[in-house]
Length: 267
Image 1: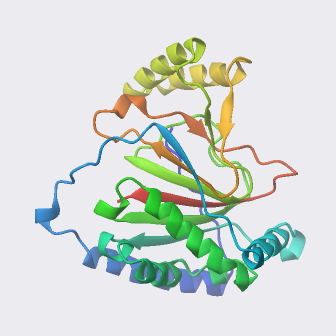
Image 2: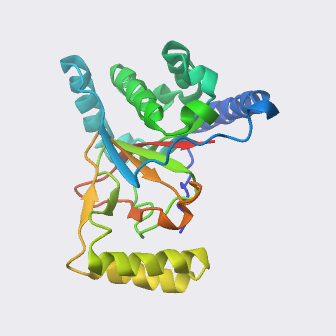
């Protein structure tokens, strides 16, 4: 199953600003094509199926601002902050210079349109850059960055990502979940059949077996903590197409009303 973000309508002026800005970003993106001599991409050594990296600890003032942002996001009714997706594209030469990358990220994401307090945003931008820096191919091909506020369960079914690698980091809220022990005998046999079925586009078989996995009491899941980057190898990593780890979005409940998520893909 391919996981696609769901876009929501923002306030009218935000939407206009975002649309105008997106047009600029697309123009920039087109203007920054990699020269033909730089292709094809020489892939680095294959990463592990799943890798976890905790983000650096925050200073006291940044942690306080982050908790103020959490409290603001918990408000409901006419004070509800609407779900959003903010996008940025950073080419390799920009990623190579942290100050340049930080300035570009701010200009493209424009999170002050969506999130408050503004004091919390420095840490969000810093965290987002740290997540991008962990991606296996970002420095070679550039990366597409999405910061999303999610208020519904997005991809609760087990799925793989049709990219070479995806970096996820939930800044606030429940994190991505994946099979804790895919090599356990009771899991490995089912997973290999699921992966074969998906390769043959037999999604009925794949989905039935995914349900069976989820219901099996012997099958356990790992889940990412807040501010923990999870690097998940995708189904487009050369030579490992049939071995992309199955993972899913966490269920959102009355207790967990939202997730603030950073997603990074190579381009």
